[in-house]
Length: 96
Image (cartoon, rainbow, N blue to C red; front, side):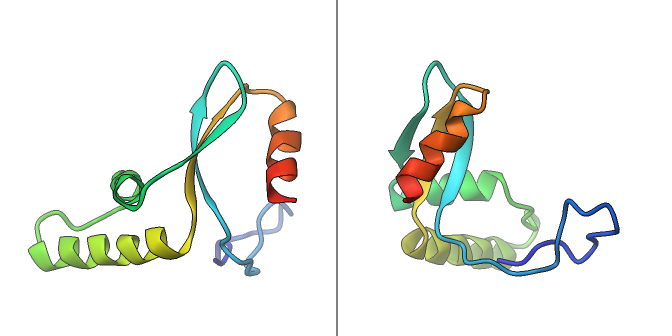
């Protein structure tokens, strides 16, 4: 995965690359928890977060196929979290 090409001079964004090892779908919760999504659930969630050309069937087919490949190769999880700093430690412990 690559950062934005429009990173500017502010120093909080980068055009550099990093491996995509997990996708987190964020959800505020009562506690920090992680739920692995099945492929179909992951594709559905990724599709709702993407910009697809809804007026062309072949574009939708391409998008769904591409997102399906992502869901098969990259673990996709729903991260329920309490909006405070504890979630950082929670993720770091999971990722090792």
